[in-house]
Amino acid sequence: MNDLATLIPIITIFILAIFVGLEVIAKVPQTLHTPLMSATNAIHGVILVGGLLILGKAEGIGMIVLGLAAVIFGTLNVVGGFVVTDRMLEMFKTKKRGGGK
Image: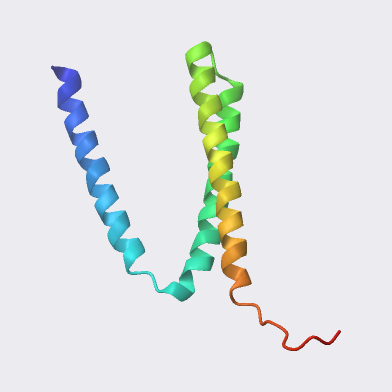
């Protein structure tokens, strides 16, 4: 019963954070998406380093598996974010006209 009493506020805060995050992101102008994505990639890079440090001190197979999964998903998030940022920056480059060299 005590576990449920502490779990309900945590779930409530998590759900409210989702709604607040969606509202904040929806109000960001399109011109700020690229800098916002770059900042998010930097934050995820720091989180990835922290995950690696914690994984180095893991004890037991469960902690190692969860830590490894966190590092893998964090790496995918950072790399994917940089790919998306690169594609977004490509949209702002001017294209050369004509077939000249």
